[in-house]
Length: 281
Ligand SMILES: C[S@@+](CC[C@H](N)C(=O)[O-])C[C@H]1O[C@@H](n2cnc3c(N)ncnc32)[C@H](O)[C@@H]1O
Image (cartoon, rainbow, N blue to C red; front, side, top):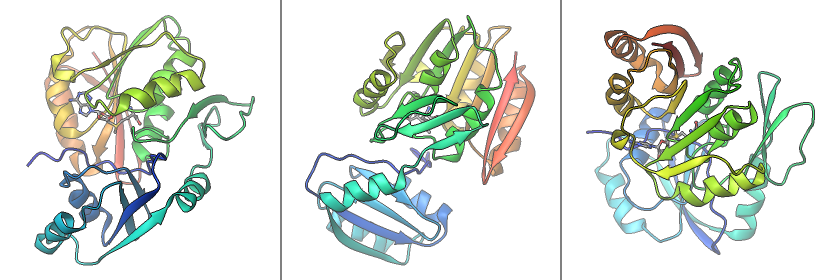
């Protein structure tokens, strides 16, 4: 079965009065698998070392408890109700600024900017990409090493728009961002506005519907199943590909896919169980 999304990071949506909170305990990988199999609408996730807290606007206790009872992944869980006041507080407590490579600072919108860094302001919401997840962190660490001045960039699976905003702040000539999830739309534009950026082309689009992918830089923090099909579609000489969303356990698979389709691996970095690969054609 293709896992829809094995990424977990803390995401929030603060526009309701109460949330139904499911706490699941156990190994992180088992929690990730269980969450990726849920088709109920998730409003936010907090991941801790020993548990994940999954928030829902609707009461899905019956349907999800049935799945939990049938699941071999999760044996210990608990339901509770969270009120908005506590939610907002926990949101503000959690989203602290993140500094990457001593150059970029990701700040939630309620934090002041620090002029010692290139600031990226994010409203932590439903779209993925607050900088807290290892894969976003690794992507930014790699991107910031490059000279994007006058380069064309595509950000595939842009989520919150965090990597596109970075590219624009690094003076890329043009940035084209796509995501196949309609839910990213509002947060993407909100984050652009927070960073006073207006000139990024954005479309809700599946990457497999892209025509020729002809850009100087391709950023794709997606997941292995998508990357496996996407990588052979990239054919333009002179392209630099920066990818993450890949678990360490899939490293040799991704490396083979890159090499078999004529890409030369330039760098592989790692944070916890995630890796990021830079390759060139
Ligand atoms: C891990 S998030 C990355 C977000 C952000 N770029 C970052 O680095 O933090 C992956 C994003 O890819 C999007 N995505 C997944 N499959 C896709 C596809 N086939 N085409 C376009 N976007 C896709 C998801 O909706 C999600 O927003």
